[in-house]
Length: 322
Length: 121
Ligand SMILES: [Cu+2]
Image (cartoon, each protein chain N blue to C red):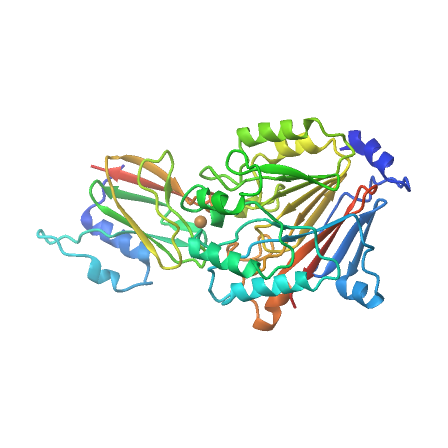
């Protein structure tokens, strides 16, 4: 990454050297605002922000990530995932500034059933924000290689291959990737050659100052490969993107906030709106984690992202549903 | 591969199902020659196939049952046998063993989960 530090220096007006600051990996608690600004990683709890009346200033672009709704799930870890999804939407509707759009990073459904997608769509109608960009989770493509998912959720984008695409908003280039299809026995998430070639071509003409946001279901970094929490060919994808001064990678799949900042790249995973999963390696398997009823909503949530033109860093805010 | 005697097979079967479901005894039908027909049951539990490797005879039935709270699938590497739909908790899926050979399979939802079926004549 050292080769690319000059880009950071050019973009950051305060000129603070980021080296040494950002090579960290932190467990972020829920309801914490993380701002990478001028090379300093700042965190505040959401309660602090609200009390101080100092919500981040209205910026050029704010959008919201929701993930892992798992509509159709009804086991002990959460008997009513439709209700908690609805609560998440209520939280969005209550925001003082509505996000420009939502990103849904997959696992809309539990079993890829049409009626699960129907319920999701029905509940989503209550959301004031109407634009939603989707990538599939492995639960959305169980029986048909993702055909139903693409038919329903990629109508408004020019999906390529098994459903990857890109778009621009306010000078930020967004890339939705699919890493839950054609998986190989014994392997992790996978992007595949065709998608990687498309990605290389997609960003070829962009200047290094263009902020990039990549979103995909399974983490694009090795969170915990033993549990399948990683993507086999993510390094190749990141290779095409490392020349950019600001790269934010948003994932779901692991149902908890986990963050890693590495040079100019911020990796971030979102909470689920349905049920939590254990911390990496803590427990016999990565299945749904049953927590006391009064604790559940504190482990579900959504992620708000704000971008201000002229700043290299995006502010990423996680808030829970309690 | 040593072919176990029917008696040993039955013992292995009982180990595999442990004592989770006694009703399986009733399902093990007695053959005319007095041996017990083998129940090839694979439990999907804790994100793993148990037993991970199973040896069966051509023509025998193999049944998977999902004991996890998470859906899983049974998908043949190289599409050598019919894949399962998504199996929710306690759902079963069966195939009949075909031509002798070694068949690898995995869960397409959690590809770290792999298993092997050896089919003998
Ligand atoms: Cu599985």
